[in-house]
Length: 418
Image 1 (cartoon, rainbow, N blue to C red):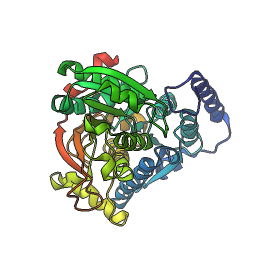
Image 2 (image 1 turned 90 degrees about the vertical axis):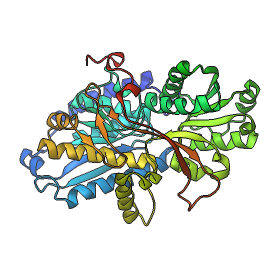
Image 3 (image 1 turned 60 degrees about the vertical axis):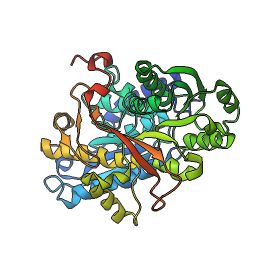
Image 4 (image 1 turned 60 degrees about the horizontal axis):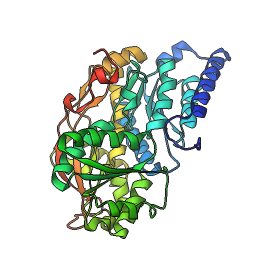
């Protein structure tokens, strides 16, 4: 396995993390001059490791743009006791070892108070391993089931994003009764893809769905032609694209060109705004999927309108993407925790964040007590090819699954006591 691939952590990755841990201990003994008084009066530093380069760069860059809005909003309101917030962005290159290295540097060298970020199931686990060891809050803004499990979790771990169980379950409950129950999965072969398939199959079992095949491809694949004849031969009612970013764009475009849509409905657990814009109306026509946010929610959700307007003012009329909105929310939740705790101490801020009931941009949310998963709605959208008001009017909202802990895996299943 190529150690550069952001799959589940390999033995080499785990060895690298152990080496980084040792390096961190060594850094602790080096003569960094760290003035406690200045730490209490200087800027509140938030590290932001995201994949600025690589297959998910478009989504990551939008996360940075939205995160900067949350920082500005906090600072314009006076900060905390006069202390302003500062965003320290780093490129994790979509690589677990790189993500751990950058996080370690942010904590040990740059002396950040908190970490927010990540855009891969694998990189967020490596970031969390570093922050958990150093008792620094990490608010993850990428989908993962594993980060909620007791073996990877700590009181300093928060998950702002949806997770695959929530997302896949919501899309399955909408799509399988409507489009059919003979299902093929085209799956990116890493944690994100695997967890999405598990979520679909668990929800699909109660609906009578049958898995015909789970066909896996490497992350970053550009050619899907070898998979398409096999999919067509299986004659599925539904083809589920359990991949992300450029992988989703390339696979949907090639499936459309191959003619799969003639007898098969294509759905995606996460139907990205950025992917739809990159792939175009014709390729994505009729594709249905889930999302944590769509800017068009502003017609019915006041918080969405307020957030969109801030983003438009900051970025020349552009609208935020789904993953961009997570960058905004991830920062806001941490900074509100600082205000509520009246402290930048990670344990005190963690306790304050665990009590949050908030509506930053999409409706009511809160962090579940046992695992700090943000309980929130899942939006089901269908891609448009006609009747678009402008270039950003790419989706129709066809359903919304309301927030509820019943849509999560139980605390006991995750290994938590409560």
